[in-house]
Length: 131
Image: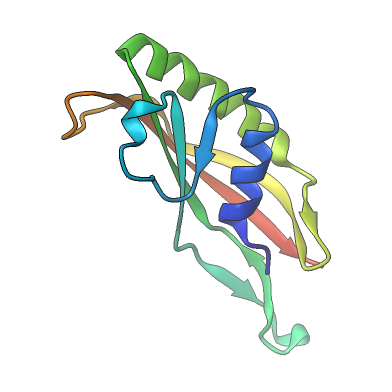
């Protein structure tokens, strides 16, 4: 199957000029804002008897945190990220491709423990079809 986290990180990094997009926040990340963090959450896999139970569809959830210096900047960037994610349909590799993008939790304010950052985030669900 596709490494969804890597796919989303590369996709967003190629569309958000000059904005750091990572899977894991580096130490002292607040010194280089804005930053987008991509985290793949578990999602159901669906197989069919005729394909010997191998996954046919996978629906991973992607949680995105957007960190910026102001609340307005974090919210604006989260909205941009949301728009770019819907363009993922058709992307993938030899193991599968994205056939749908849903957004069960759109851009919203998220409090953070770090007083140096403001955070907004969203959750998307990708449908991946095995090739």
